[in-house]
Image (cartoon, rainbow, N blue to C red; front, top):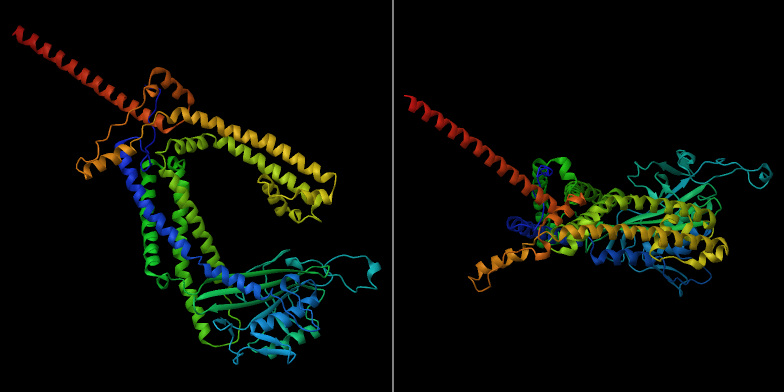
Length: 597
């Protein structure tokens, strides 16, 4: 028995191999179900259906059909040149923001409401300040070109790079402002990311004034060869649902003169508090934060009892600790958001036409939603920790833990293949096939090919020889070699796990029947104490088989604890025997002395 060492403490682990452990597990399951329901309700309350239809409806306004005699007004997604940008702004954006309609009878734009200078959009939406235009420019002579082209172009303007950006104080009567002065966040376009401010042109609430501003900007060539980004941004609030919307229409101007568009619209609740959304949601929020404090105390207690190093090897640690941390981050967001919204309310009271930026509020809200999404994901995955009573799930979990090292090695191989074929596809097909337009998209395309989401005929059309070779070689290496080896490692681990899991008794149904037997005063049949089948008894052969596995399964941990207790009993009996021997020897010695006397 000395070959077995005492295992670490396993306080807080969920198991159904003993009656006491099963009762403790059922209490944990009941508490966690309350927590899971509360978190799920809070998560669903953050994404009402109105958000989706509000975003898509606003986008469709700028994509709808527009028929004006003798004028071709492109949709937002079909803007391709700088000239298209000006036509789009004048013929689509301004009428949409001021609720104007083109009258064929009068041959001009007419308002649908009388009060067109209040910032009210479609009756129930209020503009948070007038819209504004922003432009990002690069300096001239930021690229090299052949002197033979001097008779055509006096200078050369390169692609956007932060070091090439033009930051002079003024450009054609529009001031340059930094991103901090604008209280804005970075702009993520299709080509580049613009973490900067730019030259700002403020618009007004008045349609006629805005038309004059747009025409003036067009006449003085405000957008030219050095322009790399034109941004139209405006913010709305829906008074019925108290929803904030941040709309960004991005026009990226490439060095070739063509325009690439991207539409962004993000929404959030104006009031971050959950009280106004119903008492049920408020109660769920209180339960979520309260139970999170309970789990914080429980995790700290497990660390003190089990030891931090040993506790880190437990799967529950990596599921529970991030979840607890993220919920505390949500609490900090709610406090910060309350202060930020209070400041925005003060700005609204000023009744000014100045643009009110809510970029940071929207960005933090998006982060908040992502955190809440990960909390929901980790919470539902943690539910698997309580499913140890199911032999199949128990075996799968044990198999995955056994195969972890092998799977990690295969993941490294997968990543290398994705990168290698992604770079090859980028160089071969990047100029014509959208799926290989850049490195990140190419690597993602390699991942999609595993699931069958791939258009083979595009590759074949682009290159009739290299396209099929690229596809078939990747398919052969990934599917017929690497993926089969990956599955083989899992199957071998599953077979090994099956040999150990069968020796674990299950007390769940015994405890449930016992509780029902007591609650019904004997109407339900008394439970039978769980026993192992005859072919699962611990004989010498089975014990050797378990010992040869060299895996610290729960069955072996129970055996080690049992052997340790037997060792303690053996030492106690040995001490008792030695003491009894000493007493007998002492008694004989006294008898001898008594006889001599």
